[in-house]
Length: 340
Image (tube, rainbow, N blue to C red):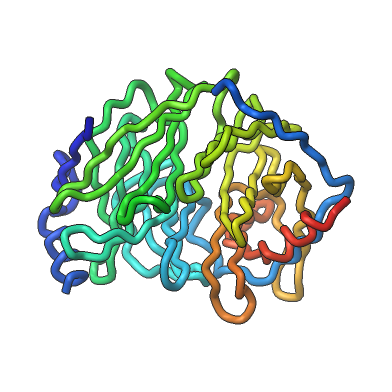
């Protein structure tokens, strides 16, 4: 049964009804899994930093990227506030007066004739699924609360555009009261309303710690390893350690996964079961980070440096600034595929 969420939330710090009208005007105008043998690569893969953003205003609590056009990032700061920034980390909007601990990637969706980016996220209290809406002409991202039956506090969320249903966003999340299940649903529009519709719950033997959506493929990671739910039978991969952030990409019909751990390490894996740690290397204009937190992968090309997309990480210097650091994801996975 569909659960409706009005584009006019109950409480807000801005006039969201008027803001959304402006957007429209400007824009229109587990069990039973097949276990995959895993093959850890003995040495770390070389991952030089190709580009880095300007210093961010502060450390991030969440990071996501748009799926169309020029890559743009919705960033959620640890102390609160969300804004859209460019590939170089330059602010594109004013900060929205919100706070979130997790974001799904932004999907371009037609909402009543308007082209809008929808970024699923978690409300400040953690008790609601929200959507952060952005369109050129809006001074700041706009938060829309969805009507969804959530029990407990949402621990994390992931999202991507559906490959089978146009203008539909696939969403997955888990809560503190049911940390062994990934709740899956979709977000779509009905007129000027956004509707959340739950579809299934994926149950695992141990807790979920991170997730990723890649089209209609659902990936969860936790104490059980990595579980991939696509068109065929679910696949379970064992890993050392538990990823706290995960991102995925379908490139040349092959699933690629990247993940960060609580200690700051970054690993990558492919659907064949190979996985390896990344040796993130400094370049002439950038230093290797002391710590990596948020991570996101994109197939969007930008400039000549990334014709096949990129892996973006939030790199933190010891006692210094956070930046978005860019790695060549195509080169990384070519190394992984070729490794013995």
